[in-house]
Each structure stands twice: as C-alpha cells, then as structure tokens.
Length: 315
Image (tube, rainbow, N blue to C red; front, side, top):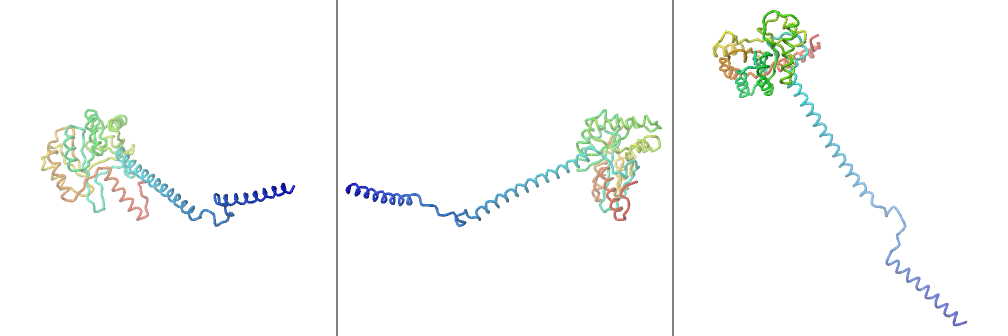
C-alpha cells in the first residue's frame, strides 16, 4: 500500500509539472490577449482620414458631373438659338405687321444691310462668291417661281448663312384680290420652307407697291413689310459707277440697300458690288442681314423704354 501511495503521489507531481509546463509553452506560442480597452481600438484618426478622402472624391465627381451638365445645357441653348436664327427668320414683335424703310440706330456702330431681289437666279452665284470672299451676309427676297426653277441655288444661299424673304410667286404689280394675295405669298413661303427648311416673316412687295392688296395681306399675317432706303435703280440700266455712287452717297448707319440678283442681266451690279463693299468698309461700315438690323433697333428701343419706364413693345 505504501508503494501504491507513493506511485500516486509521484503521478500528481508529474501532472502538476506537466500542466505548468504546458501553460508556459501555450503562453509562449499564443500570448494571452490583454483585456479589451479603448487603448487597443484601431486609431480613430486613420478611419477619419479615409472617410474624408472618400467624401472629397465624391464631391469632386459630383462637381465634375455638374460642370459637364452645365456645359451641355449652355451648348444646347446656344445650338437652339443658332437653330432659331438659322431656320426661322422671325422679326421682333414691334415690327410684326409694320412697314420699315431705313432702320434708325443711335449707337456708334455703323451698319448697313445689302438686299437682293428677284432671285434665285444664275447671277446669284457670283454674288454669293463676292459676299463669301468679303465674309459678309446679305438678305435675299425670292420670287416663288424662280425658286422653283433654281432650287439648288436657293439651298446654297441659306447654307452660306444669308437671310431670305418672300417676294411673291409671280412678282405682280396690279391690284389683286384676297385669294390671289394669299396664293402669291403663301405658296412662296411654303416652297421656301420645302426647299430650304426655313420660315421667313419678311415680305417685300414687288416694285415697292403698298396698295395693291399684297402688302395688306402680309401685314395681316404679322409679316414685316421690308422696304428700303437706297434704291440702285437697276431697272434703268445704270453703269457700275452710277450704282457705286448711289450707294456710297446715301450711306448711313441703318441703311437698307436695294439691289437685284434675278429677273434679268445684272452684270453691272456684279461689277459694282466689290467696290461698294470696299467703299463702305473703308468708311467703317459693317454688314448685317435685315433680321439682324431689326434686332439691333429693337434692343435699342427696349433699352430706351426701360430707361424712360415705358412699354418695351408695340401695343
């Protein structure tokens, strides 16, 4: 029994020693984790720094997207405005149904509008070349049956940025009834739109006659009846020098010059045109289309009305 007791005692000793040794080795291999305290959290500044960067990246992206959207919106507005000017030769409200001659401007800028009647016509092409070489725009008043004959010339006029107006279908001078006036003007307007895609609210009566029923119909349709302030009188076959002198001697800011590109031989006009342009440029004139000229006067009148606290448009 003594031997057995001694053996059991030795086993207890060995067990205690083994347990102690095992605990020691476990502590070496896998150190005990310290109690969880605030000191052992992931440092807060690191998390905050990451959050700020992500937030800034999102703000940068949002800003870039907004700028891109604003850019697209601005560009779209510009395109829309260009489209309106290019494909709709409208006139300010005050000129709708009005008769205009020269456009009186009070500003210091000197401008003049060159206008050509009775086209499209073969002579329109060299006139377009002269205008293109000088980087200026003009206004063309078309006869419907001429546009029907020369549709490609009409397309070229619009493609090169010039303004167009209605000059009736047959260029009649005599008195017409309401039905005839309707067909003369509406058929021409419809063909202009069909061939070029543009609409115009400008009408020029053949021969400048205002009392034969045509101008009255145009006014009832809220078109501007566009007359002129300088007539080169090409129907009397003036020489190139006479045409040049007529234009230059009557030059003033807001002048509307009447010339012709269709319905006959206009070789003298073709000879005179480059010198007319050069002479006006030398005097400091700039060239605008008739719609642009009307817009310029409208802006002046609006500004004057605002300063005087008056209505800004025609009643």
